[in-house]
Image (tube, rainbow, N blue to C red; front, side):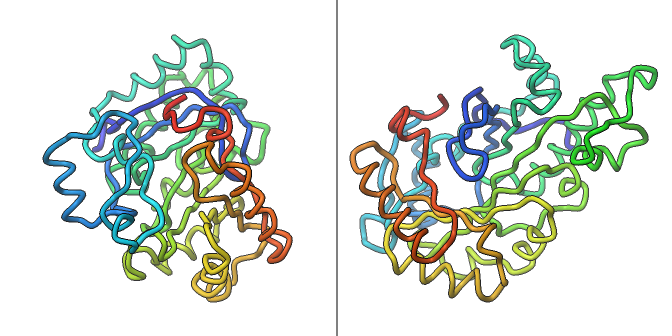
Length: 295
């Protein structure tokens, strides 16, 4: 049984992207990713071997430098090799020490499972087992039936319902099928499929089974990074039309990682939203904290 979480960083902040923008959230960044956006595997392996990136460093990968990608994953320095196996109690202790445990327990503060890629098989098992561990801390005599129907499903695999009603978001690239056990724990799925501007091949970045599985959830969004109108056309050609994704579940945001061109890029996305009728948003955390990670 997977009894630890491979955590590269965890911190209390505000959700800066997607339909939950602005909501106080606790981010749990899990290590490792199955994609290397903006980078070739050879380049990534070299980074992993040399461990030369500073924590939080933003850089351009070889595919971006060669014009084969328009951006590089801005959290690479977090998930590539940094990470420590943490006991399940670690997160609970962190929340209590920071004075936010009750708000996390009742869903006021969202828990964001992110990465890297949190749907890697070992991570899926660890999230499920962590939730069961947390739930089992409450004796049966202290457990209560939940009244929020949106959260009853959280513990449908367990024998009783707890006073725990956390709100789970997961941030995934949509290339790995989410297991039944984890699927039923999730309140929200934030899927960020990668376009050809990531430098990843179509086979690497599009898994029809994983995408259709996400669309079975009652609260999901497909969140795309766009830099040009051609990116928008690709979204329709590769995702919206073949998978019949409703536009109300499509969010686009600008491909930016600094405040330098924040307003111009945000305006571009909103103009595209008017034209193509998806939801146009920006990256709030960039507006507030620029390139700083984990704030």
